[in-house]
Image 1 (spheres, helix red, strand yellow):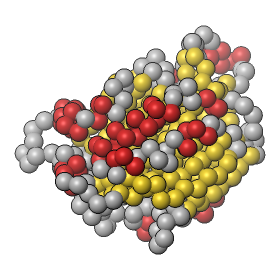
Image 2 (cartoon, one colour):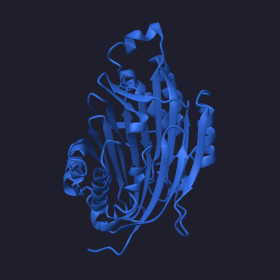
Image 3 (cartoon, one colour):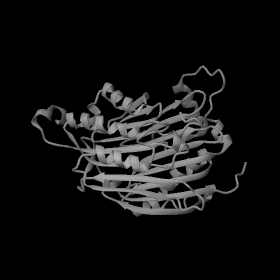
Length: 359
C-alpha cells in the first residue's frame, strides 16, 4: 500500500512457452497437452508469494484457468502465463520460479512481454520496479540467452505537460510460435491481439458503485456479482463467463472467460486517485465493429476523464479502430504513438481525454 493511496496501475507480464521433446516427460505431454495447467495450486501459490500476492477466486474452462488475485489477475494456458498485478507487488520476481516449474513440465520459454503505465505513486514501488531501467535490468538477468531478439521502449503520450508513458519490453527467440490452448485449437501469435486500457479520474457516480455499503454482510463473491450487475459490466462481453470479486470497503476485480480468450477489469474507486483498467485478448478474426462496440461499452461503464489504450497486434486495423471510436461517448483521441517489437508486431499507444462531463 502506498503511503498516499493505493497504486492502481498494474504491471503485466506475459510468458509464452513451447514443448521440447524429452521421453521422460511424455506422461505430461501425451495427448492432453495440459502443459502449465498441470501445475498444482501449491506451485502457483509459491510463485505468487514471490510476487507478494494471493489468489482469492478461480474459474476455468477447457482452454485456460483464471485466477482473481488480491492484487489483480493470473491466467494460465497450456503454454502461456499472464500475470497482472497492482499495488506494490514485485511482479518480476515470478520469472525465476515460473521458468523452473515450466522446465519440469517439458516447456521452454520462447517469448516474454512486460508492459505497464506510469505509476501514480512511483516512489512507493519496491525494487526492481523502482524505475524502468531497473525493471529491464531484472528482465535481462532472468531471461534465458536464447531469447536474443530484445527491445525496450518508453512510449510517450504526446500530450502537453503529461508525464504519462507506456513502458514495453519484449524478448523472443525470433521464431514463429503458437499458444497451445487444447487438443482442438492452436492460436498463432499473429492471429491474436491484446488491448490494455487504463482509466483515471473516473466519474464519481460511476465510481460510487464500486463501494460496499457500511455493515455489508455479503460475501466478496456475492457483492462482486451485485457490482457487475449494477454497472452492467456483463454487457461489455455478454458471451463471457464472469468470475467477480468485491473488496471491502471498496474496489472490484473481474476475470472474463470467452472460449480461448480472457478479459479482466480492476477498479480502485477512491477520490483523488480513482483508477480502472480493462484488458481484452481477442482474435484478429474479430471485426472492427466488435472492437469499437467493446471499447464504447467500457467507456460508458466508467466515464473516465482520462483514458489510455495500448494495442498489441500484427494487424493494423486493430489500433486504427481505436483512434476515433470513442468520440461519440465524449472521449477524444489527443495523440498516439506506434512502435514495432519482435514477434508481437506493432504496439500502438493512444491517449484520450474527456470533454465536459454531462450529468
